[in-house]
Length: 129
Image (cartoon, rainbow, N blue to C red; front, side, top):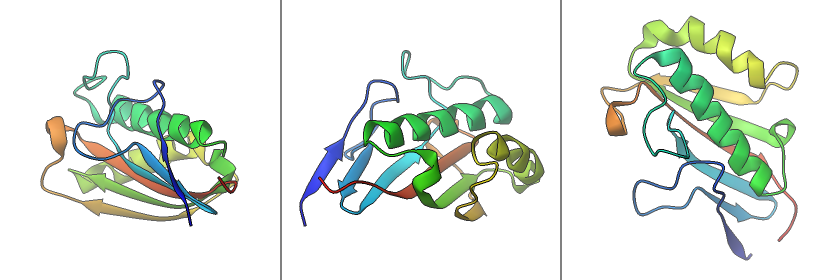
């Protein structure tokens, strides 16, 4: 199996020693995405909702860069610093995943990089490299 690094300027650069995504046919593994604006490298807002929307958009851009789409996402892992945001996240999540419903976990954590409120990663099906 050959692995291919997935990189796009439409999502923030990695803030550590990792790739935005790795395609290992037939799978794409997308690293955790924060609500960071690709242009600035900073959080889009201190608030949960804008961060969640931006994190999902960053994830989407990496999936697209790999030649896949959100309908091919099979599993999503979500990390939040306040589980009280769970219902709000569900509303935002359905903006990206309305009919297609991947397997998903939402876990409360004590902290995230850059003081973020939410981090999202996924696994998607992709074409062979």
